[in-house]
Length: 147
Image (cartoon, rainbow, N blue to C red; front, side, top):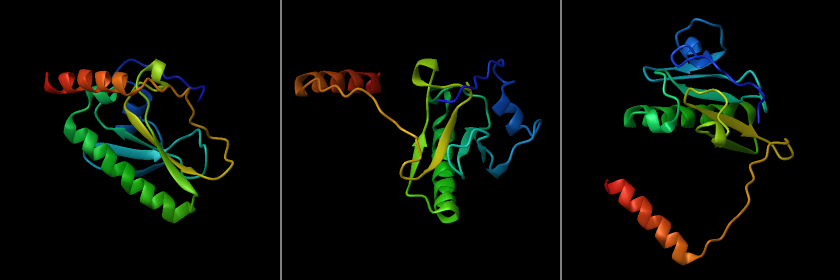
């Protein structure tokens, strides 16, 4: 994970400043709801961040329209990254909250061109709770969706 942590107050964070054009950034795309720019901590050439223009900390604070716009921009950037850099694969990565790995507390998604042996790894301890527990989890989520 990157070592940079932005501790700016909401609405004054580094991504708000980039979206507003107040600080320099290598922007590659912008529309009414999103801005896409090069990550200064490149994992591989073409590593782009897609951020909401409005300050929202996590996916939980996005409107449905913003969430859709961010995914559309990320897909558009992924297509461009594939054409420009011919990676072996592309990873879309998005973290929410410090415990989730978020270091800049403004919603953003990483578009990462990937190459075999690039040193980037996504790993977690696999747990297999069994079908009965999976069904119980599913029921909890269904109830929350209906609430």
